[in-house]
Picture (cartoon, rainbow, N blue to C red):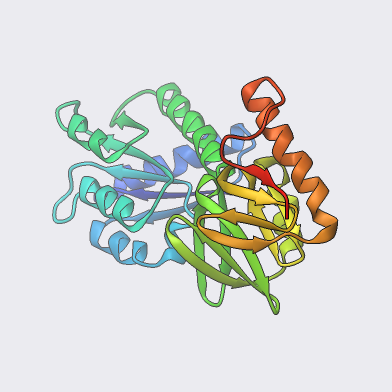
Amino acid sequence: MCTRIVILDDDTQALTHYSMLLRKIGLKNSIDLSIKEYLRGGDLMCDLEEPRFYNTLDILFLDIRMPGISGVSVASEARRLGYSGVIVFITASDEHYRDAFDIGAFNYIRKGESVSRVEEVFLSAVETAKHINSAHITLGGWGEIRKVHIGSIDYFEVDKKKVFCYYDGGKFGFPGTLCPLEERLKDSGFIRIHRNYLISLSRLDSVSYTHAVIGGKRLPVGRTHAKPLHDASRNMVFIKSGQPKEPPLAKWKDA
């Protein structure tokens, strides 16, 4: 898996230095990298307007103080647009990095620090990016890519080879089928309840042998899926509570 990185620094020498250094560290640790360099914050801001760009980024390395649009401004805009990845600031002194952490930065590197310190921060950032990616699913099609937090998803619905994801942020449609999603999310508490529906067990409001209510929406339960859904729901509660009892939210009702 390739780790996608952006480096922003108005100093050409510093930009080249960090780009080469990260590639060297990546090679040493068998990490496949894709690095894009920016000299101006405005150029990066323009690219960040495109979800297809920021939804595929893993780590942003941003110079804090720059003429024009600073790294802090870029980071703030990236978060506003929905970037959920890792941000590492590059700074010439400790004087300016404290305010930057209000944006949700992961760490910072002082210019001139040792290679070992840069390597330590970088490797930790890569591991954090992997963790973030495992908690998200990237959905795409029809010219748009969207990274959605798995915990925010209510359910997926398929209709004529079009899949719709219903989550806290709304609804997103893309071409496909439920089978790859079912495989990808089987260890994240998702279960097929019907040929047209894949739901998150943790988001259930109530459930019977014929219907499930999730996010206020009443969904049909297919006959072949009723017992697996029943068992999965009870097993989930058993794990959470430590004793086999009726779920406090997902209560089984007779059809």
